[in-house]
Length: 254
Image 1 (cartoon, rainbow, N blue to C red):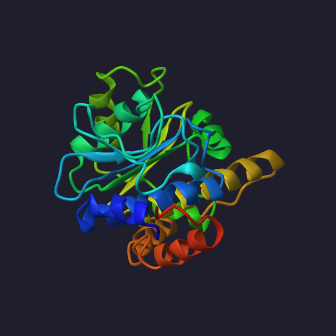
Image 2 (cartoon, rainbow, N blue to C red):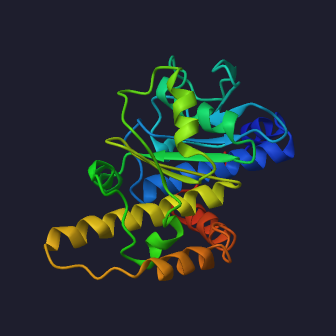
């Protein structure tokens, strides 16, 4: 760690710095796993013991995000701390609208993740939505929310409708737009996105075959969904994923 890195780190309480590191890692992982969209996606995390949340500076690719260049915004969208990234831009307003809606309505949520992946976009168009085709889809059985498309999320009035659509769930399909997951930890939000994305991808691949489908009966799907609760998402995977980022995309801790 350079002297500059140490100076950046010393600006923040330990809990906030750790959240910054986790969120920066999540951005790198999202890029690694194909969840990024050049500069158009966003992942946020609450600043510990605060109403503020962290978001990427608009214009940075996911692989450029670091712990110190994350931007801190307040509930009204004002930039409280611009971070260290040199740019004339601030934050993506659609990111603020979508993420502030969830953070305001769900105080137990500490991380919100939104993607425009091809698989997520594909399933978002299907009237039937996500189907319980594979084991990875079971945690979302009767537990995924849907929000109808209203155009670009720049209307502050949509925040209330987004929150109402999500309710108490941790995953939502934004019709004609993409996917959203949220969690009590960064690791939980990421792993929910990982499984939701994989379920969407396999569903599209299966439907493309045109063959008859064999789906588990409803009672089995419900059992599998309940079983998934025994394995908290991110508890075991996140430390391994951090090691992966350190190996393949170092620099996120700066």
